Image (cartoon, rainbow, N blue to C red; front, side):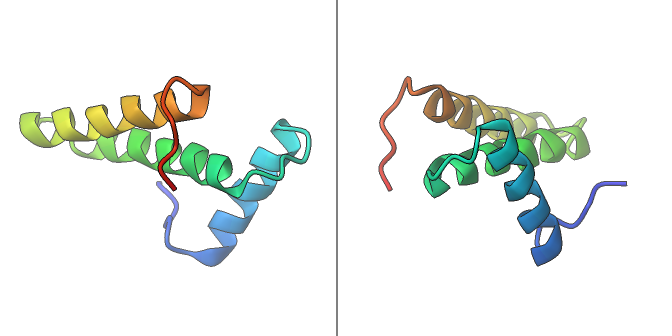
Amino acid sequence: MIPDANKKDYRQEKTREIKEERGGSKEPARENIIYIRDMLKQLRNLAEGEDMLCYLIEMAYVEAGDLQAGRRLHSG
């Protein structure tokens, strides 16, 4: 079962996990990108069989990965 990404408790727990992995990072934008990328991966799995939707989700997933890795500048 995929957790409801809109639930505040889930997001807070995910953010806490990310902070622990990153050594208490103080970069909320980066944490948000990591969270969004995780959700995109789950959405891609749900969209299986819908070619155009999968393609667009994959594009967003790659973009989030580039932002996370610092290969693109964050606009926010």
